[in-house]
Length: 489
Ligand SMILES: *Cc1c(COP(=O)(O)O)cnc(C)c1O
Image 1 (tube, protein in one colour):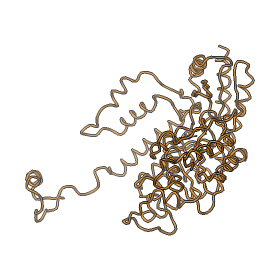
Image 2 (cartoon, rainbow, N blue to C red):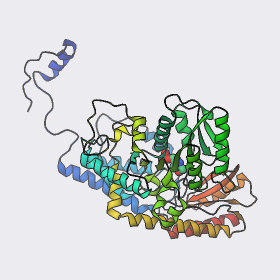
Image 3 (cartoon, rainbow, N blue to C red):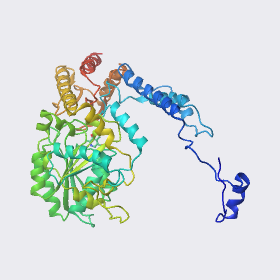
Image 4 (cartoon, helix red, strand yellow):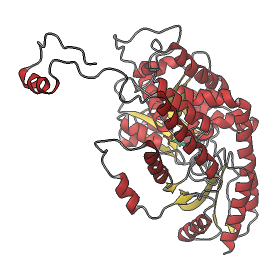
């Protein structure tokens, strides 16, 4: 039923005339939103989506690791603009399925390229629920209980890394954004508003996200001081100390050192305690990039490897790697939450004050409105329990150890570094870079595993990073056999 529309004043004539011609004197719309179909249809669509998802998970174990062929027709289809009138959900789901099949498959148990994560089904359901309830969690007051849910995970992480009660965490879209927020906090805390003479230190094995963060934070390129790593590809604390003193003598202001807990190329852990000693002595902010390796802290061996991380001012974590979560889940921990807040908060007075001791996440990072990331991480942790994650990560350490042993025993291969965590880098002994890449092609021809390559010390290496929750003994043994066949082919 359309209600009568009284008065009619206020509309300008250019707007009102066509409106009146179309509607007469009625108010348009009413009833349920046209985007909320009846409940049985909602249930049906949900069922189709869950059906798709469950089947997708089931098929991972037999699916190929990559599908790089026959794109043209599909790209044409997917390039279409949205239609005037809608299409059936089932048809669209089918199209999504076809699109998802193309390219690399990071959800595959054979995916050991880059840094895998895998994606957890429980997280996907959590995201679905978070999107449906669509509560606003950028501030505490609009959704205090959901903010507490997210905060409980952050407090658990601060505790896991031995940070004091002044610490605060923040869920971010990924490691790069975490490192950016950390760098901005360090800059604000140590350099103030005029920072162009500031200098920050990384090893040449550090992830490029640090240089990127420095660039977008407004530093000139030569503010990023690259210290050559030692023979074992780890940060050399002595070289760091010398670089800092040299720069200081030349009038620069050293303010930050970024150490890695798991480097991207070879998976090495920097000597965090020794770097922390230099940071302390030279009054540098210590940031630890633990995007890849951080969650091994849950295991005894990982905790031993990461010793010293508890001395960091800020830590980058990537739950979408070491907690196997879907992409889009990064995390930053700050020893003193107030530094993070000081770097980002502009004291917007229209925002409500702190509620029940809960943080306003918007004041701790660049985002105001954001997705509710808490459920994506809280749900699997509470559903499976932390022991399941610890066991899975312990298993990855064992599997990397096994793979290293196996490959190292092959005379055709050079396997120079014993893995600190779960990454094994290797190349054909005495081979050229081109031969190394041809070996990668032969390995990929199997369809069962997917590795990546990286330049280390000026030479191309192949790397197998075991971090998907689905990469278990069968697939790693299969990888070992595939590599063995491929080197002798
Ligand atoms: C993945 C990774 C990053 C970047 O994190 P994103 O989540 O991809 O933004 C930074 N450092 C290391 C060591 C990484 O493994």
